[in-house]
Length: 447
Image 1 (cartoon, rainbow, N blue to C red):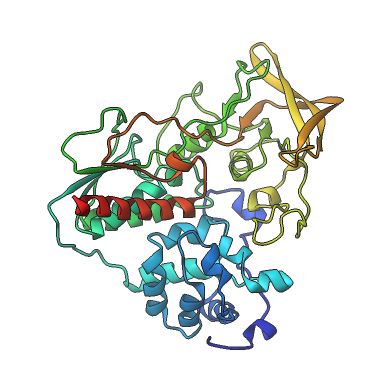
Image 2 (image 1 turned 60 degrees about the vertical axis):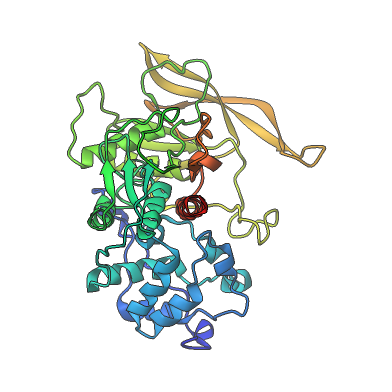
């Protein structure tokens, strides 16, 4: 521990976001950074707990007390070495992880001021790139070939770990560029795509081959490989099958988000294909992170207004006695996109879409109540009969994704990430990709 009593004298300081009036006019990353001195002070707040719950809570098993001790002492390369042992892509998790580690930090549990672990992680990896600590490495080959199907966070992590173990790795991606959810699901204002490209260049220099535009039939995997890592994610979004669903102007959230990222990458779409919020009243159905991403994108496209509705009740602010630690705290989350302007409403069920001349003009919603289940299970939804119509020229469905139904796979195939568990977090997918690589290595060596 660099400064034993720093947690008593130094308050938590977040880098914060760029001013709203500035950031809504571009798609650059909204989060700012602290200077080196401030970052070292924040790292010094870590108490190096005897039982580090942050380490336990991290799906990757990261070691925040160790890398923050090095960081607060100015030993940036040592901090990077510690961090990179457990995390293949700190530049991703340092930007978009919900920081399960911070939710379990003793300073969070004692007085709601956890160490800025996620921001410290991002600072370490950016320093590593800036100072040249990260250079392509060459690994001795073992003569075996592995195919990775899907290049999202799980696929990239599996490929990275397999390559380091000496396998010849080919990553198959159905889209035009690698990255999966990272590239086509997460807006640039949260994760700039230059960050992904920077990492891909290193992976290619280390010998990993990427084949884009490759639609792989999982029932007939490509031949010539000793094993397969299936990391295809959860491509099927949950639909809302209510009257009026066929109206124009109703889209899955990912349709809009992926298209906008493609536009920023230089692709063009004609007027009929383009999904834009410009000059429209936007309704986002779904209260999660994907819905938040739609809000931020709608503002940058020029929406007249943005409303977000959620079928579940509004969670409490700060602390929820119904979800005490070590459970994930279900509390009200206000993202940078929400701060940019959004009407948020809860306990609303969508009954039907309303339209005129084949286009959506609104959604009839009904207030609902959630009653405790008699058996103690999931609460029961009760309609109240209180209905209204919310005006909307553009409706975005952000209600999550369905776990895919995979065909029977050969014994030398390992499924990882969202394809195995259903929709999850980027950090959990990276951890799953690492485990898949270890499983494949163990399987092939056993043979």
